Length: 426
Image (cartoon, rainbow, N blue to C red; front, side, top):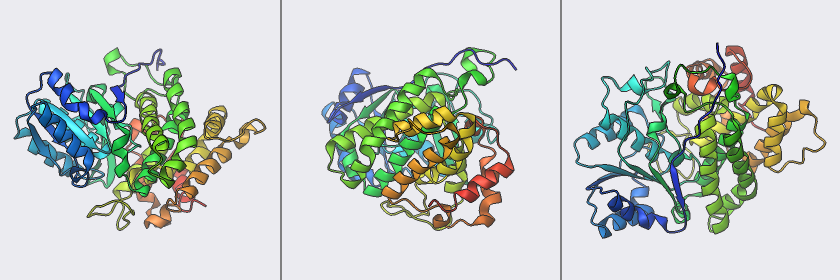
């Protein structure tokens, strides 16, 4: 194997400011858009952010086609429903207003209507799908997040639950990135506290995972630049964004959840989400996310407070963070300095800490945030027991896109121990 010699920085254009949602119609008009497809979910569709989008399009004489049935934590079936709707409509740009579920659905709609594959799994990450390359540019997509967590407005990744596997997987290509992300602090006023907590903990894990991911120089070099993956491993540019996101989380996350009227905290968490998105969108995430996918997909009865849904649901940020302490205790051996630096960015004084304690120190800091934000106390609180671990391991193993970025090697036995340690958080 020839090791990688380069990394590539790619992200969406981002515009931040209170009230920038009102500019969406102007942007579409400047781009010569004739008709926009607006995607949202049934809850956000009734709220002020979606209303502002409609008003802006109307004021700029941009007709719209509305799809307001996006599923929270989307599935292959919900993707296909949105894709089918979009194929029957006439539009030349997309506006996604909502959380990561909506933005990811919009990415899939854009891809599958522009370059329809012979089979849905053709574009899906291997080994679950074929991982075919996106053939070329897509239509303009403006992403307007209403949560501060996924950073999906910056990335070329679309995540969904593959129903027959009871696990998440995704599609990844730089060409999926939104053309523009509009970060408007007004839009996160509508978040219930538990949504703010879950999405904020996703920011926290995004940033730590990308900072501690396998270095880009330890990955194989592709045959040609166009084959370089979106998730390349930790690198000097992503490191800057990831560490700053952690500093912002340390300062603002608890404040935001405790008081959604704290404008400074809310605005900075929206920025932190995008900062972490730039970091992990180029470096990648690893085991906490890989392990989270079966946790979300196999849930039987748990429904999180604050989420208006008609199906069992583990919010993505919770499914990720519940695995994080056990993972970082394990991976710290491979990169203790980076694990300590992540803890330091989160507010820990590490000046007298020993490197051999790095995993414990970072895990304890993450657990402190979990306790402050009233997260479930481990996987057991979601309804899982030790008898579910083999299935959870089996659901993690195919997540090569992220698990191969883990800085320390692992196998079935190690994954089983990590899930066992995550059953009770404290």
